[in-house]
Image (cartoon, rainbow over all chains, first blue to last red; front, top):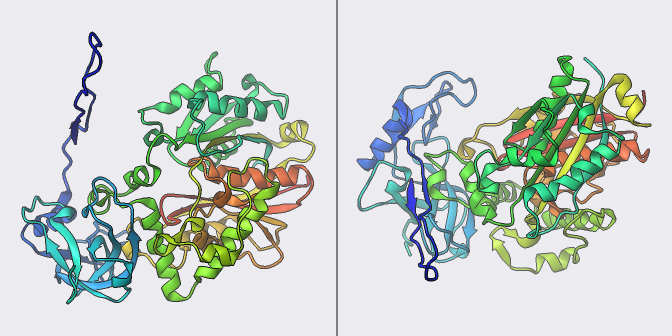
Length: 158
Length: 351
């Protein structure tokens, strides 16, 4: 992150200096999160098989129950079912949609857990638990969760 | 195990914005009041531990400046957690258990008012899957409320009843920020803030802090007429990926309660449930049923200074034991989103 704040031009003779907030480090995403975000760049979604055979998506490096390392990546679907949702009426900077939308947990087909993302919808009355949704991909993928631009409702995209 | 007690508690009068005060100025009178409560000065304290957040202060190592409010010269033995002060108290309790200290001072505070708190809270999430979506903390909590509503674990009316009861209880709490409540029917007639949550389901944004003195054995008896003895304390955590959790239960509350020796025989329970739907989850996890007074202070729905609202729950129970109005109580603190991490403490009067 490297955010330079433009100086707004104070009065004559005032000293000014830019405020630069930066995170001057690169992080490696590792074999599991790395595989997931690389998959997104190719418009594929990967989960991981846990010790009890369930598919966790987005994938985690360690089994949520036992802590055992996990490694069997499993491709899941690009459509799924809403398992919970709330309505974001006041949109904030950085959120994937800059119009009111649903924040949601979505269980992709073939996965046993749910992914956090947003749904583009006209209003809260258009969204319900159990609704079917599908991925709308970002036009220019970068290898990040935001390669999923949002989800849209099946048969009723706004 | 050494017998350790809370022997003094002080807190600020919590409010929406203490804009004329910086953190040091806000917490200093609270620190002074807690020490004055036992007639002690910082030189009588073996170990000091605080809880606060750089993300709220907007500055790295912000807690170092707040040490000016304690007085760190001559040098003191000191530690800090980037967590609610209840976890600072846990660290101090452990320090006393090791024998390295007989007395400890614990405080925590925040000013949430300078920023956009629901947005700042999103920085607590993992940086790969959730953080880049910048989910605000209210909508995030709404996911848990919806899961509970869908499962029939609660209803919108029950949520409104929780909000109503807590804020009516706050009438007797001089430190509360939101005092009194419209009727449940009026609450339910209000529009949604972040469907399924209405304004009354959400905690207020608060500036404030709390300070507590701990002491072991005879020192506790010397400093307090009725020390509030810590009979059990434990904290546990659930997985951070909410999509892989059953949001209609709080297993780490139940586990911490079991490890802390919670048995249901309490006069009072103070639980840290910032959103109305969460109170039931915590009470179920604690196994606290009818006959126990719940949140006589009004809880986090009446005042929610980040980093302090959990330690305040321990302080509220301890205060009631020290003044003789309760014999035994349980206090709960939470950290993270959606009750992810939970601390449970059993407090008791007597010898």
